[in-house]
Length: 192
Picture 1 (cartoon, helix red, strand yellow):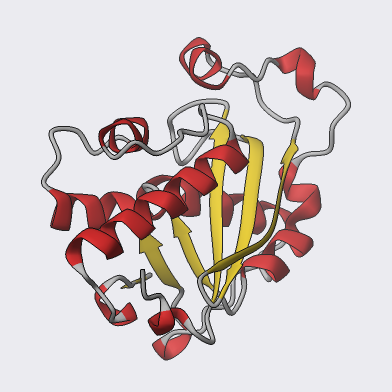
Picture 2 (picture 1 turned 180 degrees about the vertical axis):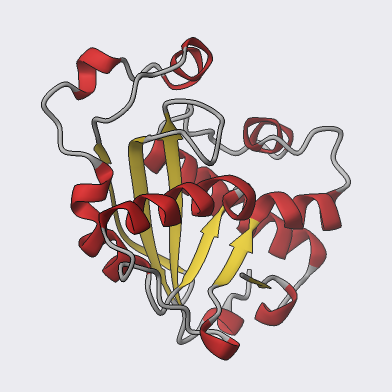
């Protein structure tokens, strides 16, 4: 597959596992981040964080109990580092615009009102590749859940753990590019 249209890009894939489903109240339990340069995986990591009490539904999804994060730092305590890794890069994720980014931005702001993601798009906007939006637009699949898309296309699913889900989102992104023969980055970007 020709990924030459990604030459010169830095894309940061992110995924979070949280204490619940509310973007205004949930805390980040796990944060996963992977860097892709020129369309090639460079490195990735994830970390567990304390804060809040995990709702039963969220616990059933990711399995990260309150005991597993006991004594861990809060995500907000790592806000400056997170903002640095996310700034001036394209951000990729599955449902990242509606879920992950609002929670990450709220966590950064709870650390300091000046702690933010600096976008490299027009007017300082953040350039985002949201694979859920792209799947709905291009694939017309029976289900656009990340695990469903992975199963449909024979891709490994990350099992609702942050770094694994970042890799799954990247693989869904590549599948969309391949199927739709897209070679124009602007067709894949949403500005937020």
